[in-house]
Each structure stands twice: as structure tokens, then as C-alpha cells.
Length: 508
Ligand SMILES: Cc1cc2nc3c(=O)[nH]c(=O)nc-3n(C[C@H](O)[C@H](O)[C@H](O)COP(=O)(O)OP(=O)(O)OC[C@H]3O[C@@H](n4cnc5c(N)ncnc54)[C@H](O)[C@@H]3O)c2cc1C
Image (tube, rainbow, N blue to C red; front, side, top):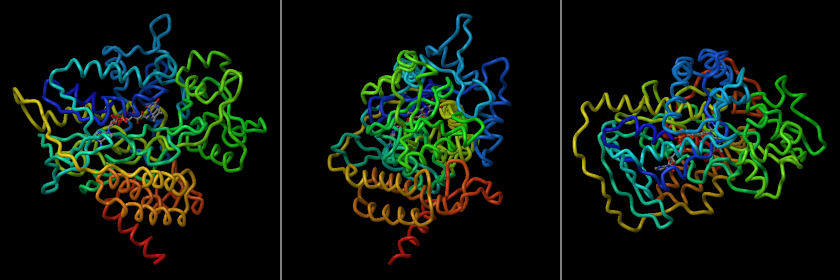
């Protein structure tokens, strides 16, 4: 979403968008079910939205960024509406708002229950296809950044098909990374298969500073029926009154948090994880709250349940905590710039400080929109007048590249879920770092794979360094938050590799 919205906001300036799949297909954005958080209601305000964002973030949200992102949220909803997104409205034309966890009131605009991401992306894709200044190269992905004197001067790209090309260098006047998060680095994830931290890893390999890498959000209610990725049962279901029960029928969240099922995500995710570990089979029960309405009001959930042979109107839905959102990413300033020159970042690949240690539900799409516009404005201001008549880009790809080995990727993902997941400790994190190093050495000549292992290293090393528990980061060996550590983390890949090398050395 970030890339397309930025490209539109840069028009009529010429923009080249590269996309590994048909545009929009590999994106988390198209899978977003809940919607976009925005203070639309007269009873609501950007200040309250910002306050909820800060509270959910567990002490490390940058309040200036929370203010920036929430202030004009309504304008983005109106802009998307104008582009054709059919947000749900009531008979008077007011936006229908869902309540999601840790929001103090209903604040999430949605489309046909759980279709927000798909419909917003359709509107953006249609707009991009009608915008002559945007050239989209499909089947092409970035593999590395070329850097000179601390500034990006080019992008190494390759074909994304299994039969990869060798990387080719493409040069532009300015560079925007909007390649999504890292959830797919985990074996149990809600993210599309393309989203495996490669873009964050690529920036880190080029020397960019990475922020808050340890903060990964695990979604409490991924449907646990054996699919990879695991389909999501949106939090809006709990907003509608769905409850969490275990195989004994116990509503276990009541004893854990006053907000029960609508407690902050990290708390619900750990409770679900504990139930799974104890063999209690946690389940989401929509029967009393929604009955058969779940089938029509939440079509994506109904479809995923049908694939697994579950009728949620009759049976509770088995769920598990799955890697869902990376609060960490490329350290990105308020103006959208990364630490490398000539590089802007938006969306989940960035870490702006909005989410702190725990993202407030449905703030992800909003952040992508706000920073896409910020980046577009920053790029336009930096480059000055738009050039006329820029020729289309054509790339000659040479065969002979390398694509990630399936087994190595699966081992990497399993390591992340087992050792760098919902509950972490020093021994597990060091073991993960050693495994990542071993796997990386086995395919060190594959840029796509080393981009993944770079991000995995950054997450595990940062998690090892944060000797406390905060938000999405829980250390069983340091179960309390340490007030002295209530700040964001920043790390380079060189620093993370040194931490990894020390872990390797410990056992040799
Ligand atoms: C199942 C699910 C439900 C969600 N629900 C919500 C929700 O309701 N509300 C909310 O706010 N957030 C939600 N999120 C989070 C939100 O969808 C993401 O944070 C957001 O979509 C990220 O947008 P983005 O533009 O940064 O990345 P994406 O939408 O993921 O787009 C990244 C793009 O980069 C491309 N790409 C990847 N690697 C490369 C490469 N090497 N070279 C070139 N291109 C590349 C991908 O193909 C993709 O097109 C959800 C996420 C998931 C997975």
C-alpha cells in the first residue's frame, strides 16, 4: 500500500514501482481485515487516538510521531473514499466503526466486515494503472542497495520467478523502500509468503540503522488449522463480542486482564500461547456474539474456516498466536528518511516510533498512508522540478541468479518461531543466532536469502540485548519491564553480527 500511495502522491513526477508479483498480490495490505484506525466519530479525537497509541506501545512510542500520524487520519479515509474505497456506512452515511483491542472506543473504518485491505488495494491499483507517470515493473524484486559515500545510488534488482536472473543495477533520482515487514520469517505467521524481512535486511546490509528490531507483534487469533500462512480471524470479531475459550470451555482471559478478550494484543497472544503450550487448545467462539452472521459479515474468516472444514456458526475456531507485524524496521525519521542518504522508507519496512513495543490495532495501514505521503512530499521537495519526458525503464536480465533454498528457508522460519517467538530467553536466542549463522553460510551467495538471515539476525540479537519484557518482547528470564530500558533500540547489522559471532564463539 505504501508504495502505491506514494507513487500516486508523486504524480506527475515519473516513478518506477517494482513488484515481485502482479502489483498488490504479494502484499500484506491486501490481506488486512480489520481496517484503518481514524478518529471519525464526533465523540473521538486525534488526541485520544494518539493517547491510546502511546498507551498500547508500552513506554517507547515517540509521542511526536503518534501525534503526526493520528492528527490527519480522517483526511486519509476521505481521500481513499474519493478514490473509490467502499467503506461501510450506515443509513445516514456515517462511517461504520469497529472496536478493536486497546482502543478506548470504536475507531476502525472497515469494508464489508473484513475486506478493508483488499478493497483499499483495488482502489489504489486502479488509480495507479490510470496514472501515466507511474511505470510498474511486475515480476521484478530488489535484492540489494548500491551505496556511495553513505547515500543510495542504485538498486540491484532481479527477476522474482523461481528461475532467478542475476542482479542488475537500476539507478534513479531518489529511492523509496516500501517492501513490508518480516512476519513471514516465522513458521507460524499471518503474513504473505513474500513478506520475509528481505527489504529490512537489504537496507541493513547497505549500512542503514535498524530500530526496535526485537519488537515483533504476535496476533492472538491466527486460525490454527495447518495452513501456511495461517489465516487470520480478525480482532474485530472480539470487538463484536466473540470470546476465547479452551477445550474445557473456560473463558481464560477473564482471569488475566480486566478487558478480557480486548486486552492489548501482546497480553492476549501470550495467554493463547500458554494455552497452546499446556495442550488446552484455545479457540475463538463467535457463536453467541454473531451466530450465522459471521458467515456473511466476515467473509474472509468464513472462507478460511470453510477450507478447514469448520463452520464458525456451529463450532469454535481453533486459534494460535502467529507472527503478524514487525514494529521494528529501518530507522525512519519524522520526514520519512532513513539513516542513509537519498533513501526514504514507509510502511511496515520502516520503524518510525509510532508503535513502540506493541502496535495498536489498525494503526499499520494508517502509518503506511501517512508516511507514504510524507516521503512523496520529501522526495518532491528534494528533487525540485519534475523532469519532462523520462523514458520508460527497460532492464536486460541475464540468467544465472540464485533463489533461496526451500529447506533452508523453512529451517530459518522454524528457528524463529521456536527460539525468537512469543516467549524468549537468552539460551534460546543464542541458539537461534548460531543456527541463523549456519544456515546463512550454506547459501551466502543468494542475496534474497541473506537479506532474510540479516533481518533474522537483527531480531534475535536485539531481543538478546533487551534484558527485560516490554510489549511484544517477552523474556522468560527477565519477565518484568525495566524502567531504565524504556527507550527505543537502534542497531546496525555490523553490531548484530558481532553479537551473533559472540554467541557462536561461546560454544566453540
Ligand atoms: C493478515 C493481515 C491482516 C492485517 N490487518 C490489518 C488491519 O486490519 N489494519 C492495519 O492497519 N494493519 C493490518 N495488518 C498490517 C498491515 O497490513 C501492514 O502493516 C501493511 O499492509 C504494510 O503495508 P506496506 O505497504 O508496508 O507493505 P505490504 O502491503 O506488505 O507491501 C509490500 C510490497 O512490497 C513487495 N516486496 C516485498 N519484497 C520485495 C522486494 N525485495 N523487492 C520489491 N518488492 C518487494 C511485496 O510484494 C508487496 O507488494 C495486517 C497484516 C496481515 C498480514
